[in-house]
Image (tube, rainbow, N blue to C red; front, top):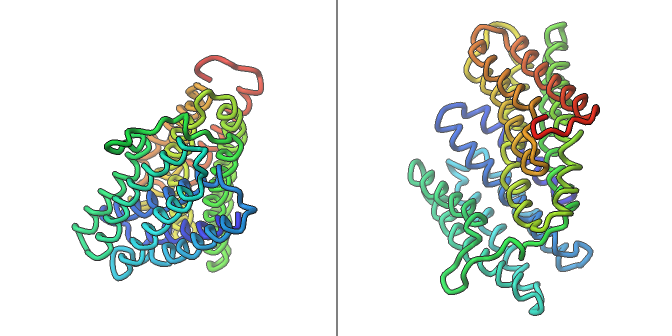
Length: 370
């Protein structure tokens, strides 16, 4: 958890970056930053599945990652301007350095695991060179190199890190402890929700307290509570149990926790942007930015949770599907309703989804579609 504190700051930086750069290019840049921050965190979670954090060498490695993580986080506001090289160097150092440390630490008796991480090290070294090269450039060249680096990073697990002459890893080589991965990802969800609450509290403290602003504060807080309920009431426990009893936990962890948690976290970050806009301008008519934050955030979150829950217990949650449909139907009204009414409607949908799921599972529905 001490290591995770760095990422509280990183998530805050990304939400502020998105708010300050709300253009098509800014959205793409924000997505790159979000994908990078999530990837460096989730890779560390995989590594700590095997390492003993009580050992001094492991602790020193994590402290080094924290220092690099702070450099990465502080570079985010100007990552596409004057601090691109700092961001690229910090990211590459975290990915390559951590993997090299683990590859060296794996005993020779665990040959398959050692070879698996040698493959990963080669892939991350290739992408790391692109992160550093992109940091030296600006504009389209930087975007192109960093997008290519991300493509290498994200395709790697799917390709099982195939390397000429070394072949590909097997997901059975990535044996993970179910409770560890579920707990780690749940903590990151808490980090993201905590950032949303911090944004809400900070903004509310700086504005005049009126009936409208207090109503906006209540709506924003209820939205965070609804997201917490939707994720934690059912999914987190089922995921831990399913991974623990899976014949191929590495494959399930790769899908459910490595990839499918990304839209969940991104949805919370986008919602935090919407909450800040709501508290700053609750009256009048909404605009594209407000609609994106207040509807797009919950929509992305709910879509991610739907896919995550389907992956761990094979059900398409009807409550989640209905919530997604309702949010899509609400989107055209984004420019007609005030930000307060728009956010209240989106929050109400999330609350209904959470209540629907809790009630339906409480009565023992076990059909393929909830």
